Amino acid sequence: MADRAARGQAHLWVVQRLTAMLLAFAVLVHLITIISAVQGGLSAREILARTQGSEAWLGFYVVFALAAGLHGAIGLRNIAAETLGWRGRSLDFCWLGIGLLTAAFGIRAAWGLYS
View 1 (cartoon, one colour):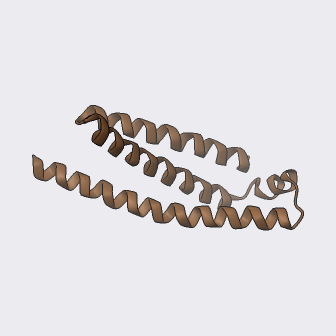
View 2 (cartoon, rainbow, N blue to C red; view 1 turned 30 degrees about the vertical axis):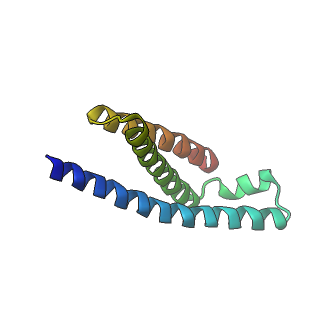
């Protein structure tokens, strides 16, 4: 039983590091895009006109939202386990719910840019 829990913790550790790398790349792309658009003189309306209907930007921001939701939820799970001593399935279901909700908000925002 302890071996399975240790493997689960190791998997979460790896996933959090992978999502951190993905988020670093996504934030960099996002910031470079926004800065270059603003410096190029584009207004918010013009930026939205360029992103609407772009499946590439929709895909990018959906992946960004999923990574952010997963990364943040794992971090919150670890904080709850370390500071509150919260353990077990209830903790896992709670962090999973938080991650899915956070990702859903991000995906909804991405869909708003697309549609």
